[in-house]
Image (tube, rainbow, N blue to C red; front, side):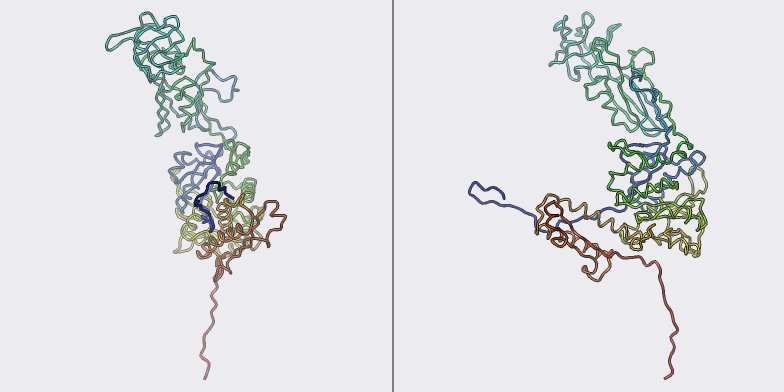
Length: 591
């Protein structure tokens, strides 16, 4: 109860009605595969179009180098072409891939060169093309107004703005001047680590003897992408220190690996890239070259397909492959395009079953054509409602090789899932939908082949005269008849995730009848909307679903141990998979 200690009138607000539930997204895809460039550790990157993918991950990979592992870019392109709008990408790299750098990346930390270390943001030969251009720069310059204490190296500046303790400065206008460190700054008086040359005061206009800070500018170029950083410093306490300023680069990592700073012998900033040239030379441009970048090899990824499964780590920033999606609650469709290795697909299915909020789209291997081979050599490995299998492969034009090729269907099918969700809703089976961008199939199946494959949950893509190429199946890989349709599993994911995310407010509320009634009203309003959208069977809400919460679902022990248990049953719509019209002759009986 609130405290009322002072007499008066108090106005209070309280919640009593249902809390609106927002429907969870079901159209965001997650893809895993090889790419030219892009991050291979940490959280997957969101892309909202193929232009986004190309900016972050590069373009198509060649068949000659990567064979069956090259299809990520094609799958993502066809995902967006077929109606997808959001996808998360996780790049996989072979074990022998390496980033380009200006040092040997295999060295231990204590053996790295004492210099400015520059490394491409991620693995690949793309990093060998990065250009890092460094030019002298300065953020502050001032003439000396007076010598305050020559023995203590204290001087008064005409303007101390921009001068900070730890900055490296150079006295211009005097031959042989060496870099000096600022020890402290107080008002316009600075203390240096060494004395300035005799007669530092210059009252001429404009002065020829000036004290200036020594910074440098950095331009990083990769193709059409250019990053520019001004007034970069080696002062480790400054906000513009090279490590801090270039941490936001999308192209390179930079580390100041110079030895412990000695104010008495400061390094001239230009010397970090001077390669023995005169570090004090004005308007000199230096270049840092990156070498050693490698994409890795086909043999390496072929021998270790578990690179797709990835490494789970308590630190999400170190996760790779499939494991990087563990904390991603947005993705609801998963695919590893073109990779039909049994171990990879089994791990993908296990991931979806573990998270229980997404389904896997599996590609039938290109080399399996006969229905019996598809069943015995591949399909029979799975029994799950969290995956669906599609074949054959799709014929598309390859912009890289300038010819028609066959690509795995998973990217296009994921786009069709998203398209169907946005136009008809998640309860509509994502089948009898045209595959966009497809000009042919690797194999043309007839009704006889589908009679064998469809009951086993292999969804065929077929060509029909005058109707184009269409997805002609909507089954999961489950042997349980209750879960044999893709839309049923995905509808349950939608309902479960929507209720889970929308009822977080319940936690730590008093577990009593008012709360139970409010929870029931909240879920009832949501499920009524789902029923009205046509996702649930029944002429009325009472026929479409039920909600039980209270003493019928909880014992006193449950309540004492903080458990609120709500039982929900829904009646999903099923697709009209077999449309049967029965005909007979209508005869006029003799009167």
